[in-house]
Image 1 (tube, rainbow, N blue to C red):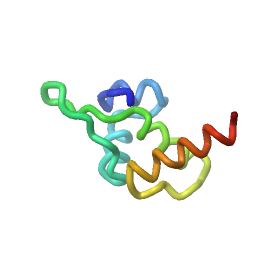
Image 2: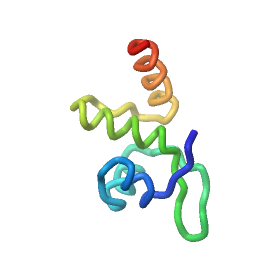
Image 3: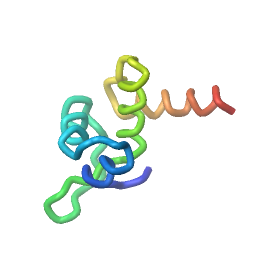
Image 4: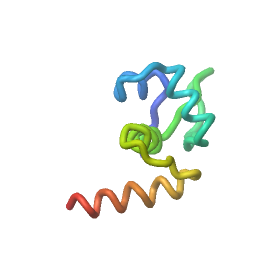
Length: 78
């Protein structure tokens, strides 16, 4: 788990912070906590959401399902 704010995730994924926040709300991205006024998300979860969108796949509905997808993709690429 890599904690990031929407702004940091946006820079890493080449998206806008608004898009990251919309994904987080729409897909229920894993929230790690808060840093002042900013919400801190799990970057791995956001990256999995972005990957599903990029591949035109349905985004799994829960963070746990996205964890399992990430594990399956890692095993398939090994």
